[in-house]
Length: 270
Length: 240
Image (cartoon, rainbow over all chains, first blue to last red; front, side):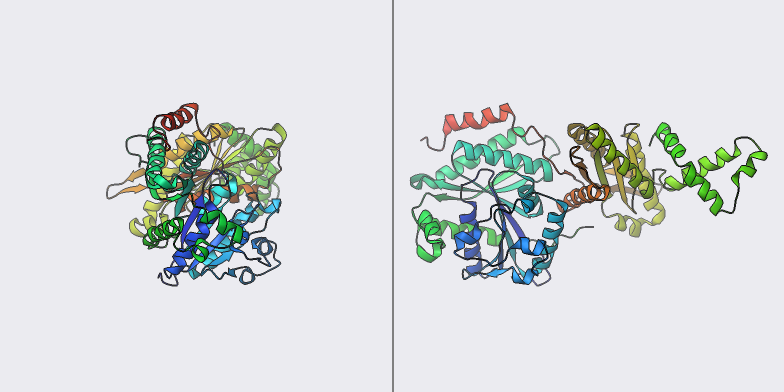
């Protein structure tokens, strides 16, 4: 466990393409990290169309937007879930808080500064696309965990997302989770997708001598698993209804991997 | 700032200069004209120069910078052309001051100012707006040109080495870049705050970096698309 004064490790889960499993992976990963004794806060960073609460089967009375607009203090917003981790919920259908403004960034910065010391890790469940808000949360994160499926459209969007974040933040390290892989050969498919993306990244994103190569690290490949859609329908986590399912095991492995990366030292700004 | 631009701005600020003279005890500056022709203008120009410039670096000061930024934002709205703003902060400047002394710190500030002057157009305005913080206004500059200009300046400052008889100081700077949306009225304070946020993002991402709010408009080129799809065909994940 990190000390009280340390800054939480921030992980942004992003994908470019929607519907590839970001929210499911974030929630299950959060539960698996909590089970390992980590204090985890999931931040629903999809400010325009938040739905982490739906997936978790909770109905938050207030959201981040209530804090932004001064109606509620932050303490009223953070929701203690029964899954072992906390949730910072966001509202849905609130377009004025779905675009990046100075008011939004000031509010988010202030909220995260208050919460940083209370947790070991903050997981940002970002929205789809590469809009300003997604890129803003990516910029706040220590790690970018990219979720992609083996479909060409997802790979294209994943690559575009990597390229944009590399350009904007000069970030050179990305983590990759391949989701919805063929269960018969999920590990192989994961390696293949990572290799494809890494090949194009090396060809087009590496600027040459003196530059740090852009690196994509495969963290895991999650197979298509009927347990996943079932868990979504039941608004429960995989570990709650199918603790022995292959996808549950892989979520645990993913959490184990991230657990080892969460010893990062606090980073100040001067 | 160019000489031409400087003269124009001085002319705009004559009233303020007269006020400075009066505050200095010269109640009626016209009296001075009896001594020698052009003396008033000389004094006014000198006072204007002092009032808008930073004495150490020769760049414009924060007060004048804000006035120029306000004016350029209005111009951007009127002309429909974007105005870009860069904020540049020297990394670990306190450490430089503490380690090498304030005289060396001053030389570092002057070296950064020299690089800014060397890499700007005549119409651009470079300012020292805080201790180790600089800003550059790039009027009538497209986002693409602003990114190019920012990359050029960033490159000239990272790293920058200043040398004296005793020391060689290698420094880096973090740079934030934003630009106006000419269709939306903006406050100069908001634009500066956005540029600051980008600069702090550059700090968070390891310092010595350039961050800008918007991505390159040409995200994925045709060649990249072809490469991605070609690999999919040759050894796609579903193949064996």
